[in-house]
Image 1 (cartoon, rainbow, N blue to C red):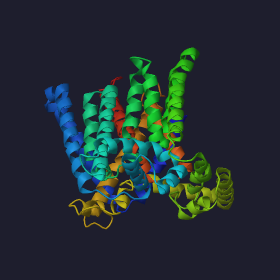
Image 2 (cartoon, helix red, strand yellow):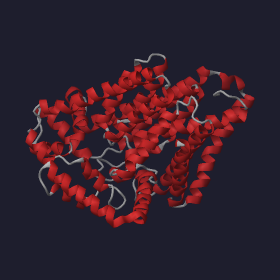
Image 3 (cartoon, rainbow, N blue to C red):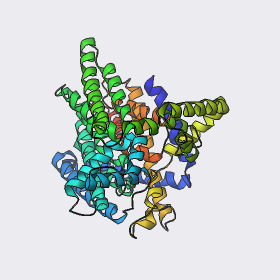
Image 4 (cartoon, rainbow, N blue to C red):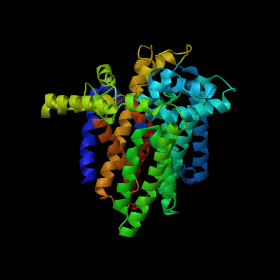
Length: 479
């Protein structure tokens, strides 16, 4: 039932996204070309160079080579496209600089972090990095280097995860897709939660997959997820997905309860500790947080207006009153009013626009951020800025890759449907992706919120491809 419902939704989404692209025919042709080349290469290797095809050390060395090539590309892109931090990214950066240099927040930063306490953990992490390594280079360069490291760590975990599930050749393919995924390079100078969360997504799934070797690794999974949740709240869907997957896979009630508690209790303890800690550090007055903090309803209200992204009018509506209860009342009244105005048909149109706004942006909102106060001119700017001379080529390429990944996810869901979910470890990632889909359907949204889940797109695409190879070869085991 899950795979059938998810498959229908994802099929509609994939083709709706394709139709929303500019020059969709050219994008389909390019996507076909990008798909045919590796398929033909793999077929030739398998037929005429069987020794290479079966040589796992060869594929491992190639994967390492691609990883090093990608690391060099990330460093070049990150240092060439540096921007002065703005929006929330800038507030977190300035707060981290203040903590590193003065050991306290300015009044402006106190207001920001009592209004948006979800960004405190990232700020303190950056402050610690700035304090320890601030003498090596300027803070912005250091932020880029930290971002590149965390992105590479997340991709490294992806390789280990894919190799564990499907073998080293699949691991090589995952690395190749990451090397060719242009939005990763575009996000390297933006050291913020969207990319900082990458290693927590892939790291938690890797630790979860290794639970069969040692069930205690479920505790490690929970710890990684808790840290990731404090970096990016949307990672909470992964915990729910792993719990559901555990309930599906485990038949013994006592074992099910034990494993569930091994995920839930460490997660809650760490999250609670990291939530309470800033208050004990005397970073601000408790009264300020009660007066300023935006409630969860604020982001639900944001998600109901226009395309579901940031809306200045709703921001000022919430900010215009003091006190958390007063803000909740204002936001809830707006939500009730907006739902009444939409009706069933209007809500359907709104959700469609919101889905295309979120999932139809193949560059993941990066150009919007890169155009704001670049610190230097770079040969890359004509390729990555909306008004750049070569941006049209970047757009078509990114759209082709993005659409291929969406279709790859669809293949994985179809495979799960045909196999009825029996023994399917990839189903944990499918449930998590479906959870993200639902979360961003009701929450304030941006396409950049998907960046940390791109490794899941890649893994599920490989899962779908490996399923086709299995059935083509007439075998009941992974290649």
